[in-house]
Image 1 (cartoon, rainbow, N blue to C red):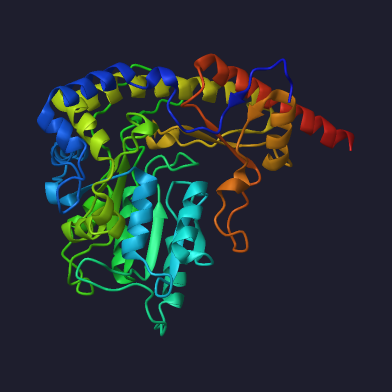
Image 2: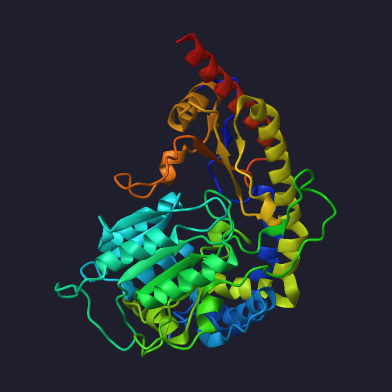
Length: 443
């Protein structure tokens, strides 16, 4: 690694330090500790049942109802320790290593999720479902393979059963809006079809909806145009689609077949380690009844009191639409223009998702020029340019299965580095690509 160059990191999907609301968080914390009732509540285990700090659930209920345009009731919400911790609890309470047939993940997928499923005893059951050009997934393949695995299971469950615990036959993990890593958004027709498929095969769709609020209208040549920023979701979530349907006959206790996994990590700061699950009340009770929660109390109880204070008077909507979205909109435009400038003439470029009329999230999914391997590009970028870039194969699911080849792709994060580094980092990437192309021509 060159000592003359300052390191640039395109891996981290976290907010830039300038976007973290430290002053507002400090003021909210002061209000919490100035009120003995709130302060003591925040420093206790939390009330039973352990669905989380009630004032935060109330504020989330109002905020989510406004944003999604659908009714989100208090009983639909469970406070969590963030999206990753929530996924761990979901798997503890709603899967079984013996009787859960398979876990289906969009390919390419959020790479860190694989480890959570493996830690839950589901190693060997992970399968990739290819993401298509329009953001749909290969439902024909998914239905065929689910049906193939739906033969009766004779193994005894590893986990006890109760009124608030269930083992789904299949788990489907997706990031339906601004998918990580591709940035694509699943269209409405696919969302509806996937919910119907889940109901047919006793599946639970786990939706990481963590980027939903980081969205803005796309304009192909001017993504920082004067097009107004929407403060509502353009598409219904899969939980909203499922919740609008009657309880399935094979689900008499009403757990449902989809949930929304939300987090403050992308819209406030990762270190708050707080999120929420929006699901049917029976499923929420299952998560609140997790042994670790019963023993240890409500997740992130103290931070939940601070976030509840922070959310007063519409703060969250103002922060997201007034600060985060304009910043990310500009950063994405700068990075995309730099990619087109540096790599467009070489046969590479950002995978286009702007024709949906919507852009957002934290990442660009970039195709390399023909013949290049992203693993080699990432290694040379680190050694020659002090640039960290995650290669495409990192986002695969099950390499022995017929997934797409992700070697021609890299994921670029525009959320963390300062604007000048976004442009400089892409220029460094361009130098690496040209060097590898020249080396290939000489060989």
